[in-house]
Image (tube, rainbow, N blue to C red):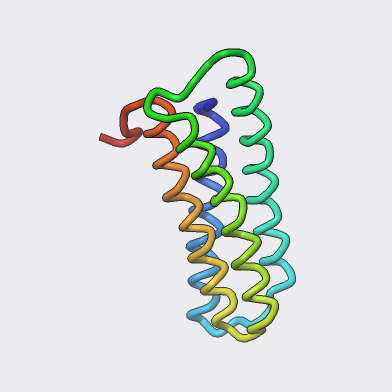
Length: 124
């Protein structure tokens, strides 16, 4: 797992997550731009998946469990998709809150993936 890519995805997830939750609580209802924001998170996760797969093929393994790392990565790929589908079905101000919490869930999963890959917490 590359540190700058991990940090980029983490910061983007936190910024989008807190921004969408705030907009949802303020009563905004437009979800068009928020779906694009979730697509940006998904793109970052896809790049991370390709990078991690390449690193494992090259012989580098996670410190704790490579299988567990990829389990987290696959679930992290599904969280923005599930949140987006639910938000498109809901179409109220709460859809933004749901998307925001989906983004923050991915951020927490990023921190756990870092722990699994390196064997130590990023923030100690």
